[in-house]
Amino acid sequence: MLALCAATAALLAGCAAAPRIEGQWTAPNRPASSLQGARVLIACEAVDPAVKRICEDQMAGAVVAHGATPVTAPQIEPPAPGQPVPDQQYLGPARQAGARAVLATTVSAWAGAQGGGGPAFSIGLGSFGFGGGHVGGGVGVAVPIGGYGGGERRSTAYSASTRIVDVAGGSVIWTARASAPASDEIQGPMSGLAQAILKGAEDAGVF
Image 1 (cartoon, rainbow, N blue to C red):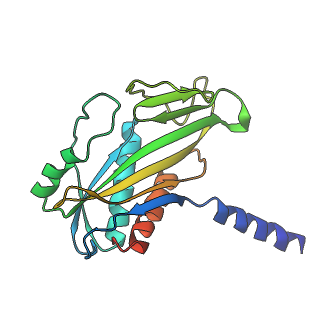
Image 2 (cartoon, rainbow, N blue to C red):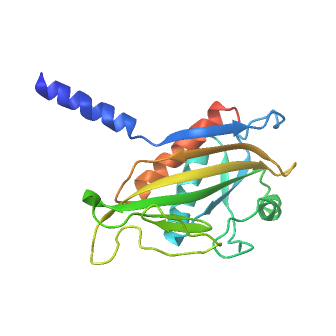
């Protein structure tokens, strides 16, 4: 009985820790047809280049699983270092690729040493912070997510803010924010976030 209870508790904890959507919005005047069968331009924005590439790979895989064809966006320089790319800058490459929509995701991270030691820090486009503080001004900073000096292991929690832009109209038709529990690797959280986001878009009738 004790073993069964422990197994049940572990299962429930695992379910509770799954990546989830915290909020989403659907444009009331979005196109009636879904994006199944369409080409979709995939773009991820992150301070860390590795996080950006992994995010794009996972989002592309999730788009395929939902019946659309992903096209990875070319490298586009933002208007200022560390700032998100405006949606309008994706429209030209999307039209050239024959895409009906742009799926753009901004990834942020919050890292803290395992066991609670050491300062915690957050990393996002346009800002970063230490110990709950915040530094702004469009700063782009590269921080080793998996460690923090002296070989100290850090567990990092990721969040993703995704918007889907209709190429024909140039406006956002759906947007959502999802978060994943802390992990000491990137691939798993990014995969979970991509699946949660595309499931939300499917439930909203976008896919």
